[in-house]
Image (cartoon, rainbow, N blue to C red; front, side, top):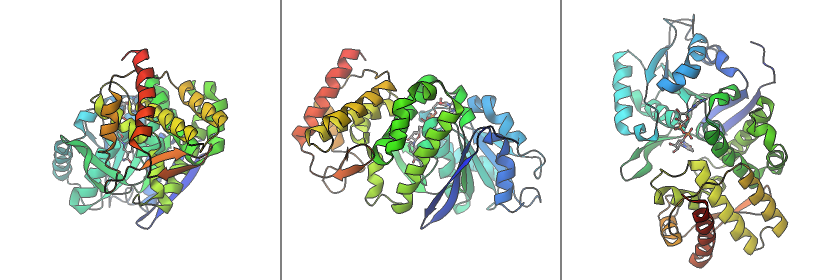
Length: 380
Ligand SMILES: NC(=O)c1ccc[n+]([C@@H]2O[C@H](COP(=O)([O-])OP(=O)(O)OC[C@H]3O[C@@H](n4cnc5c(N)ncnc54)[C@H](O)[C@@H]3O)[C@@H](O)[C@H]2O)c1
Ligand SMILES: [Zn+2]
């Protein structure tokens, strides 16, 4: 198939895995052939089988094209497993049901799963692949911006427990990721905008050019221009891949990917994950981080202003209701905290960030109060 724009391929190379993330428009039509090639023709020869895991919503929008790409490859093409959409189904019970289904369908150690959908589908499918027969292969076909730039690569898979998000899981990398930017055309605008906050994050922590592209090309990006989105996704994936390549298990550097997430996670938890999308909460967290960095003179006033303006430009910033003191208390519980120290990611100029361990409670309180007061004015 002929693509209107050239695809970008970015390698993830860690001590435990080596795979490519391919980004392009219309890629969903090529997944079958790509997977078969990775398996040395195992599908075509009938030695291996593929199973797509998706939701009914995504199936309706993009399932036929993906499944068509497997037609003629092996025994009866690809088999389909459905998961209801929504974070509430990212549970062990879902994984158990899917594993039983796989067993009933005769999936074996050489079978391959294809995760078609957003981050929820990707996390569930990756975890299913990690544990089914002690681990089988899977590929990601992420269909949300968040999944394309973040959750589909890096190897973290898992589900939620009643006690908290992502508390049960495994490290299990996909064998490839195919990010088709055309699939973003059907994504609700709020989801697109929220996902773009993660791209802004990538620009701020490591890629000044990406930041400036987002800063100056907002209208094209928000209008869903395939060229603009492909560029944004590719640059964001490159940032995440580089960080993961040098720090697979979050020993240090991988922490910078958490810019805006310490307070963002606190806002999500304080509002019961119901008021804001993840990226919207991260946007508030990044504003707070930018403010702290400005008062510490890690960034100039002009840089802080540019970063805050760009974050807001991909809004609207949406209100939420939580007390600053509650947010500060919740940050102390952040899973990423090691033995009592409060780690915090702060920008150092535009395109660089650092992890600091000495952000005081007073500093954090001030930043949280600013954000809470502004959010209150917007009405939850
Ligand atoms: N594993 C990781 O490293 C990692 C990193 C970040 C986030 N996550 C996880 O990702 C999840 C969030 O992912 P998400 O934001 O993609 O949410 P999601 O998977 O819930 O998708 C959001 C919504 O968009 C719909 N959707 C998906 N693709 C669509 C399309 N192309 N057109 C129309 N609708 C579409 C979905 O059905 C859903 O309703 C969370 O569970 C989070 O914990 C994981
Ligand atoms: Zn995030």
